[in-house]
Amino acid sequence: MSKCFKKLLVPTLSSDGTYKKPHHIAYMDWGDTNNPHVVFCVHGLTRNCRDFDYLASDLLSQCRIICPDVVGRGQSDWLEDEKDYDYYPVYLSDAASLVRHIQSQYRSTITIDWVGISMGGLIGMMTAIDLKDAIHRLVISDIGPLIPVAALKRMSEYVGKEIRFNDIDSFEAYIRKISTPFGPLTDAQWRHLTIYSARRLKDGTYTFYYDPKISASFKEHALQDDVDLWQYWDMLQTPTLVIRGAESDVLLAETAAQMQQRGPHARVIDLPGIGHAPILLDEQQISIVRNFLLEY
Image (cartoon, rainbow, N blue to C red):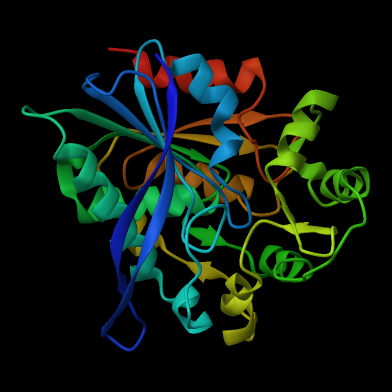
């Protein structure tokens, strides 16, 4: 049982309908590569695959875990045209390529589950629809088919801002500030998130480990309306668990209630004292995910 860092070269689907220079998707591959129960874990908007180290460590004795860096984040390649970050089929194409790549490594049918935090949950929802029966179970942390414009405006205040820090402690203080809605974390967990969020520049300063151009979606839109994806939610048939921060401004209580009544009739668990988003680091949150994925 181990973890291994890998890269996959995938086609770059562009917003103009053409294919551009291929890019690499980096991912951590945890556990036994022969295990037919595979769990894909996909992070949020500005995060990266190392957010799942705690969850993967817990699951690796029973599952194989694939944790990708979404394009433009972590150690995956950056896109040349910032407009392509605002073209959602790019993310779905990458996800489908990685799923098929893992499937091709087995001689028989495998069971694939998907755990997605925020943006990773939306990618999982759409992938489960596009690939039909490929996704067996879906776990979504704090995202839904209606995203309030107020939450998008809040995110736009810090996403893509290339702030530099002179040392890792200053960077951690900033991470703690903007990520307060993650809820109470231990010092070790905050440090973990900080170390794997940091990109050291040539001058010795630190900044975020993502392409600042991922903020293109905020630039392209006036941010005047909520994002409404109910038509897709109603198409989803995959058994789904939704983990919601009770204080979330992204997944509102009324939206979560409708998610229980529509589409896959999701199971919803509210976590008190947490906003956007439950980051799946502590034992309580990990056990919720584990129990859902391993129940039969």
